[in-house]
Length: 255
Image 1: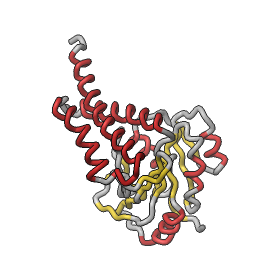
Image 2: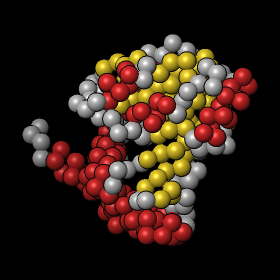
Image 3: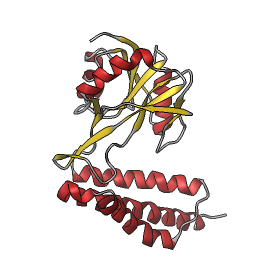
């Protein structure tokens, strides 16, 4: 496959089980940039063995980390992937075929298909799950958000074929991820001045379950869809519970 004037950019921490699949799925990239957050496993060794340029940077939050990684690229066209993602063969071909028609003022959204609990999840809001991942850094770049980061772009277009995403290793990984993300979300709400609401604590979790399992047809994914909907509802509960906790703790601080 021919090389394109494009940099693959990935941020990592302890991703030895995923990173080779990710890097090998972009054979057309002229360079691979990995910004690693002080991994203690074989992530860096694997990346270097595959020809990636590796930079070490302590964790700054998702948006700042990805923006920093983008700054290390040699090319203005960027393809950003997470370490637990890989391009499908069909998406590889589509990118190569369309590359010469890409417009610098446009950022490109790629559908993402996720594998969890033994199957590819197709409902519950998980598909197509568009992610903005191809952009020209002269015109577009990542926001500074520590969570729910995004490429800030006025103009968006889409690709047809999917990124493949191995989202969680197992249920325990899903639980720990929900715990981590809900804490970050609660802190973000607190810093923005959002006040805790008993109404939202009581209503938002079951509403989320209904949205994922019924309205977005998660039931069509079988028991996996049920587990995902329950997990999504619990994550929402944790977010509001942690916001309540933050406000209680800050009230107890000496003035």
